Length: 165
Image (cartoon, rainbow, N blue to C red; front, side, top):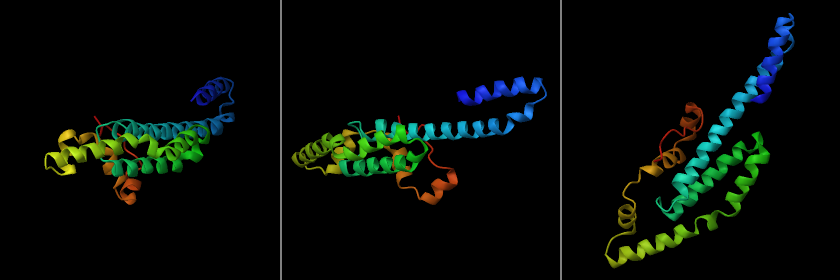
């Protein structure tokens, strides 16, 4: 972003001297690089938002679903890693190496909810739904996880939007 601005200033000065074409190809590449960096940043921010708002909080799906979602987020980060290795790799590795520790409380929570359901003769699913009446927070990431990749490709990748509350 700073590189493009520097090149635009140089281009403006060169145009005043009649040498505007000197920086045009560099400026075009800088604009492309900037657009790619912004798109990558938006996609990673979306993945981290889902992690923060849909996968890690106490309110949400059961342990197995969260584990699958966490694995999916990790895979998505892996596909983007070559574009910014020094920033994405440490986060992806942390998530991959500590996935069970990150969600250990959910496994215990599921067990307690199941026991609670048994005491009141309700299924685990009923207890889970009543414990988290507003399930809309997970619909965005779950919908994308189970969306066919062909549809995701047509849409142009991730669409974070405002699926979570």
